[in-house]
Length: 288
Image (cartoon, rainbow, N blue to C red; front, side):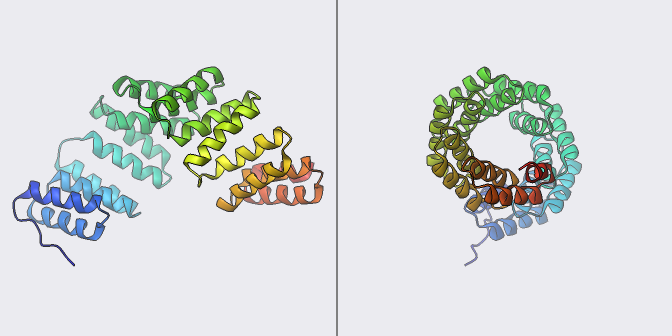
């Protein structure tokens, strides 16, 4: 049943629309936002939330268009540029996303979310030193934030600074004991250090907190194989594939487990499947 619109003024109407939005009643929320804009076409707050809702609904181009309208009618706002960057990211437009996040921090040097978003993107682009600088800025503004600490530690891991990365992930866990990504990533560092039993404990904890994250199951399987527990390892890798059948890395891991079990024909089948999903794994079938 449609709820009657609020007639107590634009602020109250926007508050009502936000409540509907947060409750997941997106159609009703959009009706309220549109009603506000009919009365005040330059209401940048309403435009912002229309863009948020459009992006949430996967209407990325429309969301970017609305953000552009908000930037035209109002003063530059860091949250608008940050949202624009997120939309471009979901559109796989990394360069445009980077520009938008940069505009956000240029507009407001204290807008911490944009540093975190830009740092994550820079890390994915392999620009680790720049990413590290952004996470340092984020933590300067928002100390002891587990997500920022975890992301910074991930960059340190990519730079090969494993002891610092381990310390960072451990700090994130101390601050947020239910934060599954920190356990997963610390487990990955422990794997690289050859500490397979310790890594297994972290992967087990990551899975307990977030059972649906396929990489935790795959890396747990690899740790088990390194510990000589091949049947358990294969079962864990198979669980990862059940969760994400199109991951080439998981099929490659399955192939390595089967090879260790002297099941060469099955291993080759897994290596072939990995190469089909991602050409960078094609050499495995040729070499095994």
